[in-house]
Image (cartoon, rainbow, N blue to C red):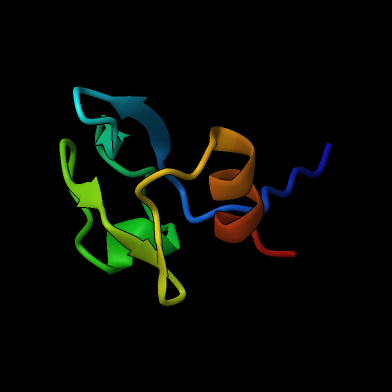
Length: 67
């Protein structure tokens, strides 16, 4: 069996008031997020120069996923 994923290797949630995009848990080993030293509870403020405040989860996932 062969498996691929199309993301950066983290789980995310929109939490808090005001809502913020938050990394939930440590990144998966060997992923782009792990290599970039992303950590649990980091806040994601922008994705490719687009501010995440006000984005819904569908918008976030579309921007974070690669091929």
